[in-house]
View 1 (spheres, rainbow, N blue to C red):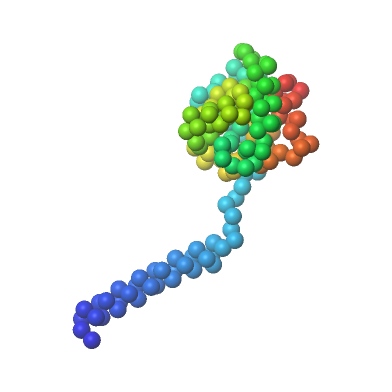
View 2: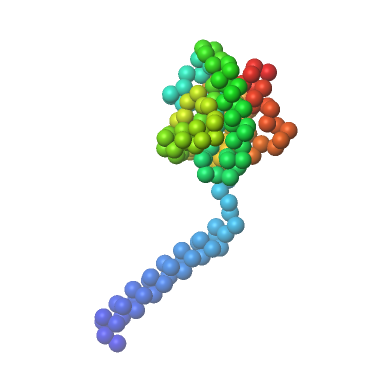
Length: 171
């Protein structure tokens, strides 16, 4: 066996060991682990910092973290439409706002909202990690100080859809 053959064998063994490590790491160590979803307790009581929004301008706000292509966000469009209407009915200084945040380009989300006849006070492109949002839809109820007073993660059950609407309406 020549020196070149020995070097070739050592390289092949090294590559095989690295590939085996990656395979074991991906299939055994991480198998079945889902990324942790957000929970309401991740948000409630925290101040939400969105530099583009002046919370005191709005008495109550709903921040909606959504994706235009995710099935639960699409299924929830009737609720979002009602939220937009509730915010628009109270539009003006000191009244409610519907703020949509997304990782998508603002233009993409604005087109989705227009197609679904959803009126948002503001649409912002944000890094979901900066808000600690791990899944969509996430709906945050915000007071005039920017504090999250209630939060909903995922598809809202039918009995809870009136909560964010009543919140915007001052109830």
